[in-house]
Image 1 (tube, rainbow, N blue to C red):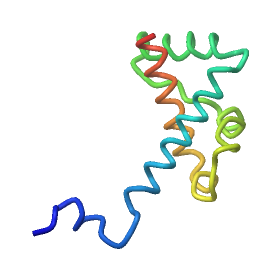
Image 2: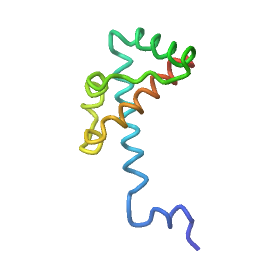
Image 3: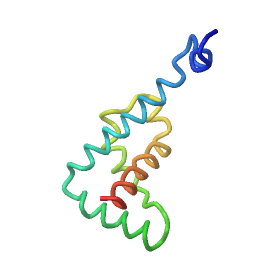
Image 4: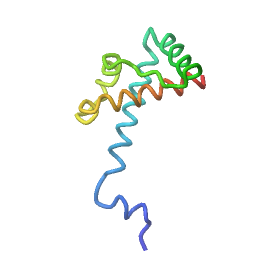
Length: 97
């Protein structure tokens, strides 16, 4: 009998591609951490989370700057969704650092 996880992913890499894209967003976050304005972004994100109970969304231009080196055509097509993911990484980091 085959393992259910093997059956679910047999013949296609459906789970692999989204996982690789999330890793690319994480790599973009590591690049964002190296930016000069990262401390300010953390402060803004932390205030938005703790005071307003919402996630601070990075502007599209900033997010694209950090995502573009790691992006494929899917990431660039759905840049708003991946910007949201990058913003969630920032919010999580800001809240728990």
